[in-house]
Amino acid sequence: MSSVRTGRWPSPLRAEIVPRGTLHREVDAYCAHPHLAVAADGSWLLVFNRVPRRKLILHPPQDPDYRNVMMRSSDEGASWSPPSVVPDYDWSGVECAGLTVLRSGRVLLNQWRFEWLPLERARALGRADAVMPGALFADLAASPELDAFTPAALAGEAERAFPWARGGGRTVVHLSDDHGRSFHATRAIATAPFSGGYGMRGAVETMGGDILLPLSDVPHYRRIFVVRSRDGGENWSPPVLVAEGEGHEFEEPAPLLLPSGRILLLLRDNATRQLHAVHSDDDGHHWSAPRPTGIGAYPAQMIRLADGRLAAVAGRRAPPFGIVLHLSQDEGESWSEPVALVDDLATKDLGYPTLGLRANGDLVVVYYAQDAAGLTGIHSVTVRLP
Image 1 (cartoon, rainbow, N blue to C red):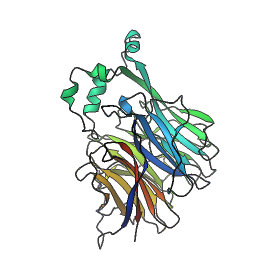
Image 2: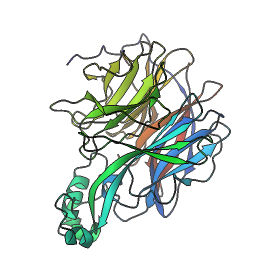
Image 3: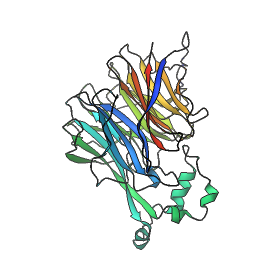
Image 4: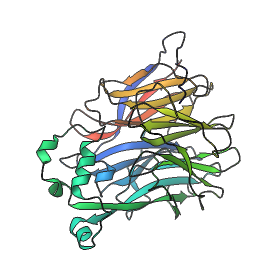
């Protein structure tokens, strides 16, 4: 596995950081995992997870009550609408969602929805494939993001904390032709032979007009693959493997289409805790081997700046907890040293930063974090780069 060139720049990167703001928080809800996209009418769309607040923080693989909600902004993130459930109230028990805006103006919302059953129902059906409370708790205890609980406090009480069982699930994409205001159709995406397909940074539309959606193999979160649509998201091809490897646990791919036509993906790796990169120069039919980027934060999102540089933001889950920015001036071959945008967060349950670029060149970075009152919500910081 080749390693990327180190991002040594001739002088320290300086950025003006505008005071932070809170976009959304609720006393009775846990809100997290945002993704931002800009609709063809100029509206900013922000989708994130919301779940009733519990004494114990659970993430989507452990909680059947998660829904995706969306806010919109008509002034480049200066103000936002209240959150609205997407695509509708029938869709609960979901993972983080991703948004894609096509050149046609159509908006795609991709979701992975777990199958959930009441615990006694799963037992009555003899569902040997279902993940029972003990295993759900074991997954929670092993999470690299959650540390605000003591496993011993729940010893022997998994069924009281998790009175449900988790089955398989399905991958879908919802279609909107009114700039994300409503979603009029749902299309299934077949992911076999992979166990499922989860992605939270949307797709890219290639130079030729194909839609390429990168996903990870939920609930294992170890392999990356892509599916392709040639008709605006109505139908999808069988999956093509992108990245896997012994000693790696790849998930949450972040795609970016470069002017050359190259497709660049940054991959979270839960084994090494370092972002890896892969690329394709033939519209996603073949992919390079994963290579470490030197970025020790995750997951990421990228955007191309007006001057051609790439900006990537990621969540830092080692002290000091926060949000970091990296720049690349060679299309992702190397990255600058990190710029700390936020470095005073209370816990490592944070991040999933996502980017919006204003007309004046300012970067708006939206992320989730716990505030001083102990509420987890959606926050932002604005960055002015030299």
